[in-house]
Image 1 (cartoon, rainbow, N blue to C red):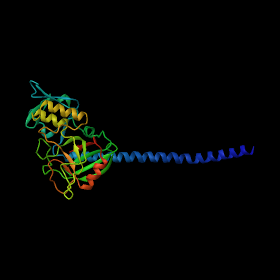
Image 2: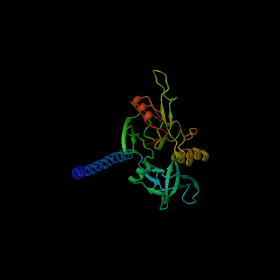
Image 3: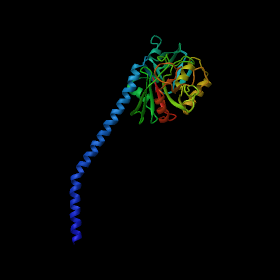
Image 4: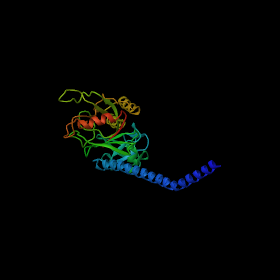
Length: 300
């Protein structure tokens, strides 16, 4: 009987404490949830703001995205098909020829060659479209701002900024890469296609040791489309590049479009690369140790 009375008393005491503590616990959960949501929104806004800033600073504003695979024609009358553009290819305002465009077709200049694309397959870009195109599919991602000479590394699929580095570029940094030996850094959506443990393109001047580097998946499918249109590559080379990108492999490095665009050591103090991106040695060491192959990379 005594034990029963004691159990009842303990139960009553515990019930009282639980009733007292439950609102506080519940409130604490709500507060933590609000904090998590706020932190997530802050990091997401930071990512979006960074990307939009890069796009706003870009010298050739992006104007259109293709919704689906899009046919490119030699003219808007005979509709002789030249090739098919991959999904989410973008065009720049500087490429549009308003005087030759009409209600059905938009005329673009691609490497001094005029081509026509059906308006039904184009969609005028908005912030949402730009962010959709730039949204990383890998947990970590790299964003390169050529205008401000910055490389930003994000994780949590673009939601949290991890590191930001100064970079060196080519003296020709303001142009997109168009062909081999033009000295330009390419622009667009790429990925890290190879982690090179002993780069032949940069060695320590004091020791002579070959140092690490990351290879960019240049050329991408969009690069290949533009060069196919202007006859700088063959259809077989275009298909080879396109298939490599779809399978996340190293694209062909044996065309006249240029090759071996790398992120390497050597310092960021002054521009002296031939299209690569140079980092301070400590920054390159961190990047190599924290980035895996196939990491998404956006260069603008």
